[in-house]
Amino acid sequence: MWLVFPAQKADIEEIHSIEEECFPTPWSKDSFHAELSHSYSHLWIAKSSKTDSIVGFICFWVLWDEMHILNVAVRKKFQGKGIGSLLLKKAIQYAIKKGLKWIGLEVRETNIKAIRLYEKFGFQKQGRRPRYYYDTGEDAILMTLKL
Ligand SMILES: CC(C)(COP(=O)(O)OP(=O)(O)OC[C@H]1O[C@@H](n2cnc3c(N)ncnc32)[C@H](O)[C@@H]1OP(=O)(O)O)[C@@H](O)C(=O)NCCC(=O)NCCS
Image (cartoon, rainbow, N blue to C red):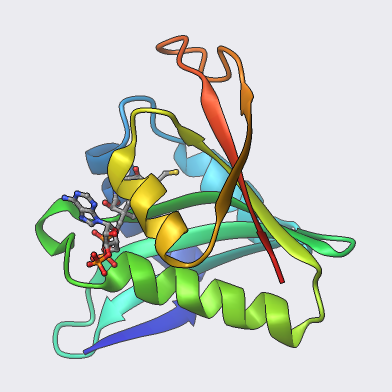
């Protein structure tokens, strides 16, 4: 069973190791610490109830009537078990509870797994940000969910 909690400072090491495992150009530890210090930013972790180890995380901002999802990742060996879905579902439930109007995010156009995950929850492709990712020069697909 997986449980979702707000992250604490002590979780950053483990979150960062998931980040490094999942992304070619990972966020730094300082970036995660910075997210914990912003009132508009939310960093949540998914943990196993059995081992207490962190298996995934989601980071989002709440600005005005919008939620913006900045990052979501699941440790490779735990992918495909519904943890990404759980994190996204919790974030969407939070947005609804707060009366937000929509949720937005950018995703690499080649990241089919992530695009499928977002589509499963009703996100739609709204546009494209050309050469958004400086490491590969890839375009970002802008996806939104109207609440
Ligand atoms: C994207 C990611 C967060 C999904 O997490 P996950 O725990 O594996 O996702 P889930 O098990 O909840 O699966 C959710 C949906 O993703 C899609 N999906 C999962 N694995 C897939 C695969 N191998 N191929 C295509 N779609 C896939 C499916 O639509 C799935 O829903 P379904 O099981 O009902 O069909 C995870 O793959 C990951 O960490 N990727 C690396 C980091 C990343 O790219 N993050 C997104 C940045 S925008």
